Structure formats: C-alpha cells, structure tokens
Length: 390
Image 1 (tube, rainbow, N blue to C red):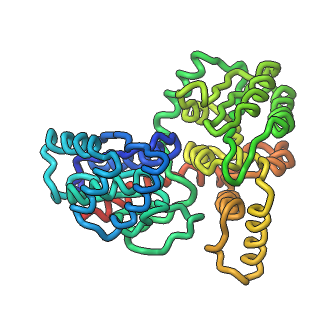
Image 2 (cartoon, rainbow, N blue to C red):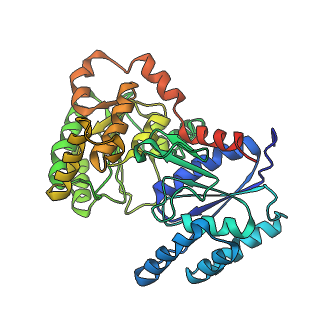
C-alpha cells in the first residue's frame, strides 16, 4: 500500500448487467493497483413488480437518512442476506466501522440505494458510476459521471468522457493469444465487429444486419481480412439469426459469439489482435472499451426509434443548436452524438461512411494512436478517488 490511503477492501455491488459490472470492476481494479486493496463482489437483490416500486419510492429517504433508515430500507428490500454477507467479509478482515479502510462501489440505479444503505451501516465510503435515477449523486462520497449526463461540477463528482470499463491493456495480448489459438486467423488484417442491440433509442433489425454487416463482410473478403464478431445480450433474436446466416456463408468470418448463448466476453481478446474495430452506435460502452484498448473505433449507425419521442429529441436538439435551450437539455440520441463527436475530434472515432472514404489513405494517424494510448477513464477515476481519499 502506497501513500496515505488506508483502503483495504473494495466491495463491488452488481446488478448482473455486464456493462455496469465491468465499469465497477475497471475502477476497482486500478484502485486496487494503487492501494493493494482486496476486491470482493456480490449481487444485490433484483426486485420486481410492486416490491420494486415500493423499494424505489422508499429509497428517496436514504439521501438524507440515518443508519436506522438504512436498516429499515434494507429489511424491506430483501437486503438481509446482503447485510450478513458484507458484515461477514468485514468481520473476517477486521474492518471496523468508520475506519476509512473500506469502499463500496456500484454502477447504475439498481445497486445505488443498497450501496448507500450499507455505507450508512458501516460508516464507509461509497462510490457510484453514472447518475442513479432514484437518489442522485449527492449522498455519495465519489460519483463518476459521464459528460453526456451533464452532471453538476461538485467536489464529489468526476466527469468522464464515455464510460469507465474493465479493459486492461496489459492483459489484452494474453487474451488475444488464447482466442487465436482456438480460432486462428489466416490474415494479418483482422476486423472485429461489436454489435449491440435494441434499447429506448436505437434498433438493430435483420434488414440492417443484411445491409451493413453484409457490406462489411464483402469488403473484408475483397481485402483479404479475417472477421471476428460478437453480439450483445440486447441483440434481438431475429437480428441474431441474420448475423448467424451471414457469418455461416462468409469465408472471412473466423469467429462469432452470440452473447445470449454464451457468457464468455471475447471483446478484450478481440481488442488484442484487431487491426480495425467496428462498433454500433447504441453502445457507448463498446466504443469506450475499443478506445481504451488503443484502437480507433469505426462507428456503425443503426436504426433510430421514430414516433413522437424521436421527433421531440430532434426538436430539442434544434433548439439547443439555436441557443434557445441549454445543452444540458439534450436527451436521447443527440446527447450520445455529442460523445461521439468529442471522440471524433480527438481522432479516435470515425464514422463508417468516412472510414470508407479514407480507407485507402492508410492506418490511423500517429496522433490518434497516442490519444487512444492515453485514454483510460477507469484508471483516471481510480486515481481521483485515491487522491481524494480521507
């Protein structure tokens, strides 16, 4: 352990969502590198129906609550087993209440109230990644919030570009060798395609897969490139079926992992051996992981949800552009576009259409490579927590 930070244990609270957990693991990893702290991980209860609604409503009181409020809320939110588990961990390691030796960290809204409640009980530090929808960032000692959430500038908030993640560049080569040993490439040019899925703003249809993925596979075949593909758990069943069909008929495809059918995460390995990485725009996490891995991301535009919601997003963006509204009023797709624009200005992201246009100009510029080499928001967040530990 170095410096004056007495941190000995970091507890990661998981909601089972891979993207959220990897954000917490990334920050925790680098913080453990700085302090020598032990990493422990447990899932929070996943409530549903009326129990979830009651728990969410009651959680608002935690923002300014007491230890008694925390115990009552945990008891009403199926948190008794969680209290016992964390309490046992602390007892086994002689972690005392208020000793400044433990941190609880989580990402997303679901684990946030459990995080704060446990923090009240053991008087330990709490960190959140992203803005929790129910209780906000105010109760946390450390809040790591992406720029596109337009967080307030406060001492307990660190603003990040994109998302922290669990891509550890030092481990990529080893993971790459392991995957290539099982699924070898026959080319020095390897393209990886990271396909996300449907959410409130974006949609990936079988028609999109046929057109976009089909074109990339044709380009790969003509270029002599081998292709490695992974989908997301959000990728719809019909889209997955189309991906499988195209991959089966393409001589360029060396590997396909369907996330809904396999828990293995191939992205670190793919980042370790790829010469080009394509990411769909629905996943800021995938884009951030790609850039953290030292690559320029090639952004694939997907379908956008229409209807009144889409129209309202575009109207808001128009009013922001005209100066009638403040930038923090942006929401939905235009808000995420700002993140991509920031990456693009720094040379570490290129739109697929532009990639096609400049493809013959050669590899990314050295400046882009240097920017990607330096980009690691999880490590920066860990250093910030370390420097501000009390």
